[in-house]
Amino acid sequence: MIVLILVLISFFFFLSLAEWLSSIVFRAGIIGPIIVGIIYGMPLADILLEVWQETFLAIGYIGLIFIIFEGGLTTRMDLLKQNFFLSMLAATTGVVFPIGLSYLLLYLGFGYGAVETFIIGAALSTTSLGTTFAVIGGASKDIDLSQTRIGAVLVSAAVIDDVSGLVMSSVIHDLGSLSAGGDVNLGWLIGRPILASILMAGLTPLLCKYVFAPVFRRFIEHHFARFDHLSNVVLMVLVLSAFISIATSVASDAESIVTGLPDAATSL
Image 1 (cartoon, rainbow, N blue to C red):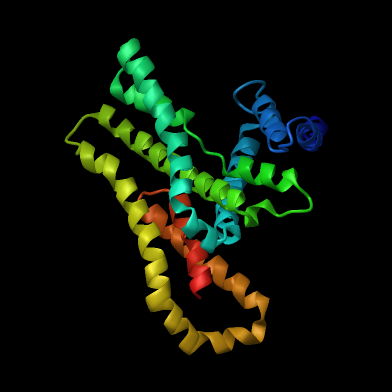
Image 2 (image 1 turned 120 degrees about the vertical axis):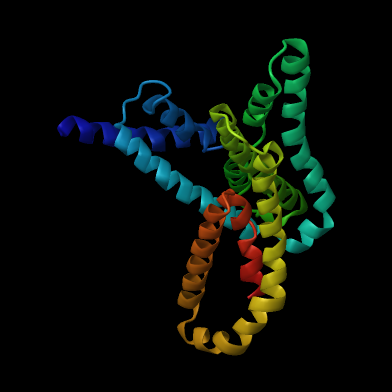
């Protein structure tokens, strides 16, 4: 038991130390903890117990949801609208280039299969929201870069990249059912998570603005005003939980839906 406690103490100590060192060396504190996690986890030394790794993984998923939620809340919608095409261009390069280069090199050059090449390209695609927040947060202590044009472009592009990455991971996971044989509709298999993500991301702001917001203001808002910020926190938790449940039920990724939640909060 003492050994297990010492392992946990060393793990958390090196997490803090690695974050401090990477903040100084790379100006991105997130890099250090990632390296420590790789060393302590299954890829290398596998020092942590499997049940601990599963626990940290679950906590990581919760953190991912909150990061995406923060990304939507801190993005200035006026700057996003003004620079939408620039954000899309930046996000597209992070997804299209790795997949395109993978097909040029592996599919055409070395004869890899199309599905294998897609999986490799998707794995190399950019998923950088956590790193983006870490870099932006540590770049300047005097200026909030997330409220500037370049910050809005970087954050929105990172959100789009993360959404695309998780959609592709869902597609890759579904492609595993092809190996089981049977009558599988490949088009629907690939298109389902993409279609669900687009519909949820598009319908969320429309429903919130024209349906839920009027109902909320007419019947609920005056009751919520008595509890000040507590009511806002409760509302966000309930909406977040509801949308995660919807994401699970449609076999899509939670991130593409969570990115629409700030629109809901803004509308309400």
